[in-house]
Amino acid sequence: MLSLGALRELGNLFQGSVEQVFMTEVGICDPRVTDYVGRLMLEFVHIDQIFRLQTVDGEVIREVSQMEAQARVGDHLTIEDRRRLVNRYIGDLTLFWTGVYPEALRPRLAGADRLIEYVQRGKRSYVIASELSQPGSEPPADLLRRLSSEFEACVHGLHLVRASWERLSRSPRIN
Image 1 (spheres, rainbow, N blue to C red):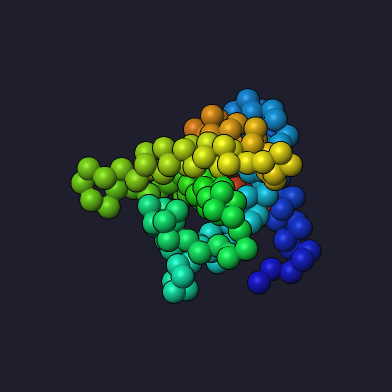
Image 2: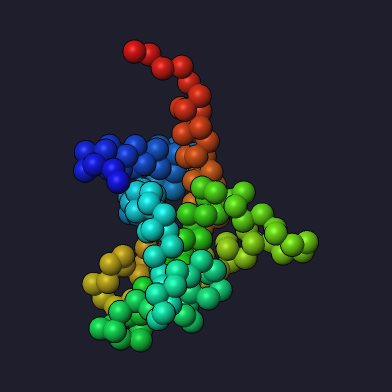
């Protein structure tokens, strides 16, 4: 587990990288989008956060196709709040995987392109979450709609952020 100081530094690295790439190379100059994506990166640092949805039996759900139907997210939520939360999570998860680790989504079987499916599902899930948002919801409905409409650009931006980390890790260290 990372210390609080290390998490703060990592969060600053993610925020700075996302802001720089999205604003200068992708053309997304909305601080709400860059803040959201930077926080998403930090949130998904730990594998337990990436696959945090579970069935009623406590089994981790790893397949996006099963998340909406099988996820148990709390008995205190209304059906609409549950659907909003799960769809937002699906949008976040698919954005993260398609943007940062697309190689993990390459077809396992001939003819099955999970990368395209993830993009389509992520866009759709953000729209559903936005439609289920109430005034005062966080994140607000208009931000979720923006994430859907700019999904491919955000994926591209995350590819570039990853490439910048890879360049950084290969650069010589100065002591």
